[in-house]
Image (cartoon, rainbow, N blue to C red; front, side):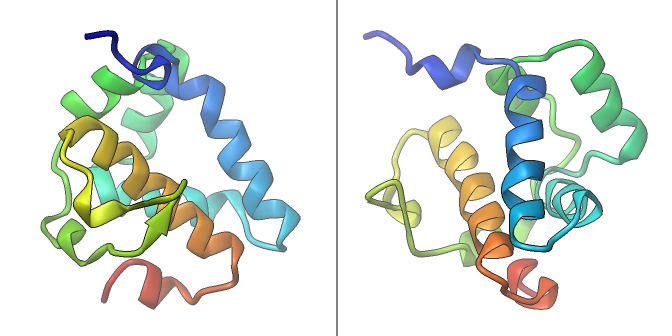
Length: 116
């Protein structure tokens, strides 16, 4: 079965779009980064390395230092699917990130986005 195109896309090509989406709604790059750090366990240096190396999404999530154990608290609709019902693990991880960035752009408080 053919893999979705997003799996082979470089994280570096989508990252600026996350930032742009947030900044359009008066949010910041720092908040986008905080979401990524919380979700994946990357830190500033390791995220920059991923960007510089143009790592694809599949590798980005496969090599994530530690997925947050609270990801199961991320629920709701994204791209017409309930994120908690997506069976393909990698697609679910990508959609978790999309969902969190959407919540940021919609003005949710960081405490709620990060499921604290």
